Image 1 (spheres, rainbow, N blue to C red):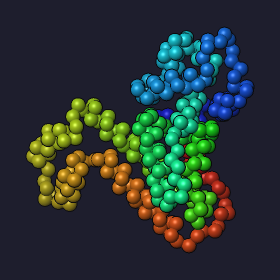
Image 2: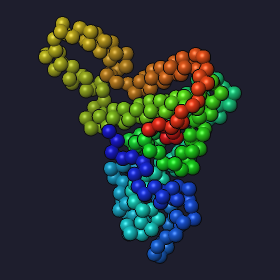
Image 3: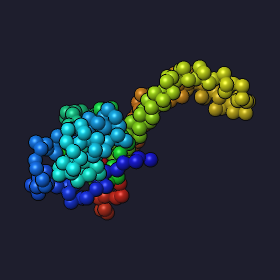
Image 4: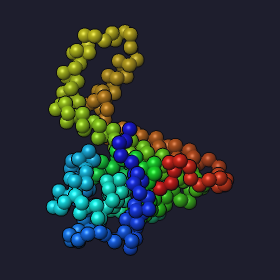
Length: 270
């Protein structure tokens, strides 16, 4: 489970900082030539290279060459800083122009944009956004991504459902990819090397007759992918299944019932 989540800080202060409300610039104490953006940039660089576990207010202050108390005159704490970091990453995401293209290409582009986000900022995949940071970066992202699903006969709720489903899939793939990389790093072996070491041990204890289906399918998958899990294949296979599901939803009779709540727990921009 994610150890970090957005919207965990003071909501009023967070929103002021996200939208750069004038009251958010009233800092206490002497000015040190910093800015909120400089703090966000330094924190993001630390998270990108060292991971979220290394991200502390003290570590950011060290990176900026100031004492920790100075940092708190710009950002209340790590919880609010994480929201600012993620929203800034959203704002910088390239947005593919898919005007006039078929819906499946538009949806695939949204998936690729988010996949690229997690490749640039691996820490972002580990953050829970069940309560998203409602900043300008997120709102621009949400508006852009919804446009891939607009005009397809889906209700507003269905559009949000489809986007949530798609982004959840991409984030899950990013987490699995990060886990696979960490496993290779920690073991100092790639998957082929690991299997070469462990296959003879497994052969001595495994009764193939007891698990014929598992042995047959596992061997076929391993031979096809070169390992028990191939992140690139899993993403490509899964995205096609997501598109198949959307096609079934889009192809049926249009749902004109848009009554009822437009948001549920976990729904909305993310």
